[in-house]
Each structure stands twice: as structure tokens, then as C-alpha cells.
Length: 406
Image 1: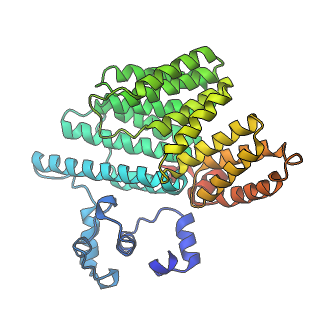
Image 2: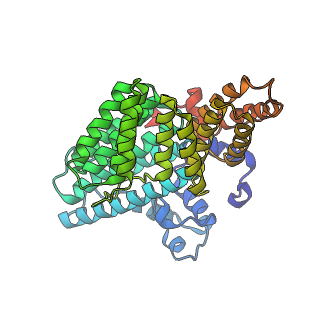
Image 3: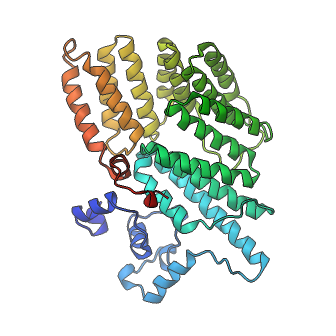
């Protein structure tokens, strides 16, 4: 990678671990070298990049670079209402492409590597929207800002930063309320419920799940979003020590997963069989049903695409917990080695926490099983390496201040 970009290894390391790069000349040059499609970028490439006949950054004039920067600015002083509407629609498409590309990247590398990117985008590309949109373009702009804040919340959560995650998701909910997109509002409630459950706050998790379901009743039917919210509700019941309510609600969620959707907001994130299996396993582990949890996780892993690196790693590590709970130590060792092979480039505080949990569980089996001590050595080394990559290490060490968190 360093050779492609014309940098030393030390320079590349500083870029990876330092603040987000926002200099457009450097970003455009690297995007061209790596052949990143223009539709996936948050800035506009110069015209010679767009038609595939690049002259390179050193051959660009100052006026060309200035033009590149100016195309990235939203012209808030447009003379006519028609121009303003066209700009808002263009921004909406740009934001939607950015969110979609982030979701694809998040599956492979985790939020730890992407959090700085999304917060830099929010700071540089999102104008302060009106609190409540009166026209379709205005509501779309508010929904875009809400979705990007929601994405930042998930990235912060995956980086192990609970405070910033709650702040971003709270801002997303406030914005979504002004967009009149009830499905988006319901989805943000699902995210807030997830973060509350992760912190052990059953009451807050249950409140957001119920509020999300209430919002969804005002929107076109959407089976998978309803399943997601019901799964969040079931998890909250399990955390609260209500196993009967948890299992009943989980059954309702599974039934909703297969119901058709009448219409779908363009800002909804996917929630598929693998996603549901992970949430179901979390709930079942809480209520002590190890057998059903194992069945669901293994079935999900059998059909989960290889590019779902973080989801697969999370499912595998949850399966490790189940296997150890059932006394299947050798199988748990094999599953852990698979995870360690797959997370080489993954930056996720959630996965790091799961690896730490696994190392604690394996500790009690170190004397009884000869496979465990070398696995523990590999686990500890991986945790040390992954904890200091990109934003994950910076957030967990407190090296990133609130002003940088957005």
C-alpha cells in the first residue's frame, strides 16, 4: 500500500493512526491511484480524473485544485429556489452513496477504521439542517443528516466509545423526528436500544424498543425492521431477568422476519438472517438456552457471506462462548483459531472485547486441555495488536478529545 501511494511505511502508519486527512489534493491523488469509483467518494474529483485521463496531481494547476475544492462546497446562496432544490437533491444522492459505501466497508474492516472518516464527513459536508422540513427536499436533507449521525453512532459503538455513540444516536433521533421518515426514526430507536443493552440498561433498552415499534406502526409495514425491534425488546427482557417474556418476544420477532415489506426507506440499513441469529443468540445466552443458541449461530454461519467479516467474527466468538459452556473445549479452540485468521484487518472494539472475554473463559481450561495454552498466547498477542489500530486504540486510550469526536 505504501509503495502504491508513494509513501514510506512510517508515513502510511501516521496517516492510518492520526486524524482524518481532509486535504483534497492528496485525497484525489490517492483515490485515482487506488481506482476508487467517484460515486463512493465524499468529494468531487477533477474532470480529468473522472474521464480516466488523469495527468496526476503534480500536473494540476492551482486553479484546477481550487475548482476541485469549490465543487465540494454547497452553494447556500443560490439565487433561485429551483437551484436550491437541485442542490439538495444532489447532496442527498451524495450522502446516500457515502452511507452505502460506508456500510460495505464496515462489514469488512469494522467501525474502528471508519469512525474518523464519517465524523470528518459530518463536519465538512453536512450543513446545519432546519429542525423540521416543510418540503420533500428539506425532509430528505434532514433524513440524510440523521442517517449519517446514526452511522457515526454505530462506528463509535464499534470502536468501544459508548459516550460518543449515545451522543451521535441521540442527535440522529432528533434529526429523524424532523424528517417525517417513521421507518428511519424506528431504526434509530433500535440502535439506541442496542447500545443500552450493551451497557446493561434493560429499562432504557426496553423503552427505545417499544418507542421504535410505536413509530413503525405509523409507517408502511416492514417485516425485518419490526423483527429487529422485537429482537431488541426480547434482549431487554432477557437482561431484566424475564426469560418467559424474552422467549415469547423472540418468537414474534422470528415470525416478523419473514413478513413482506410494503415500502422501504432509502436510509434503512440491512437486517438479515445473520443479524437476527446474532441477536437471538444474545437473548438465548442470557436465558441459558445454550443448545438453541448454538443451533442458530451454526446455521447463520453456514449461509453468511465471507465478506461479512465482523458479523461472522462476532457469531463465531459467541459460538465459542456456547461451546465452552457446553464443555466442548477442543471445538471452541478450533472456532477461535478461525476467528483469529479472519480478523487480521478488522478494527472493532466490540470484537476486541469478545476476544478478551474468550481469553478469560479459556483460562480455566488451560491445565486440562493442551490446545488451550498456545491459543491463549495467540489470543493475547492479537488483542495487543488490534487494540492499538486506528481509532480503536485512540478512543480506548482516551487520546481522542471530544472536539475530535464530532
